[in-house]
Length: 160
Image (cartoon, rainbow, N blue to C red):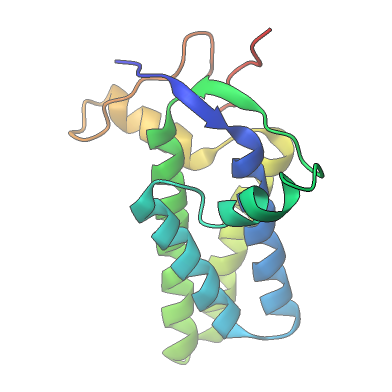
């Protein structure tokens, strides 16, 4: 089944860029609390069905005209899954930090940085690809198929 809805991919990219920026700055300044902050926003955004840092785009960049919407017909569920999975990994990174395993914590944070960068710069969402793979396997709850003409995990084409 494919239930396409308008999804603003600029909001998704702003979210990814913010995740990357905050986790990298947290690493540079050795601030594990930034990892906690990112995890909370990612998981909170997943719960409300929006990009965790989408408020930066909606409240700052979009009103100032710095960024323009790129609304595509897409499935929002795989993006929520990807953010929730990434948020869970960042939460595990935070737990590792406070459990006395900072190296593991930073490794997990950097995995999320790498995957967010893959999505931001190359348009491939690994979490979305996993979602679509689970859909193909018939796993309950993974009900959406990729948009027509789209490879699983890749950004759908722009509408004319």
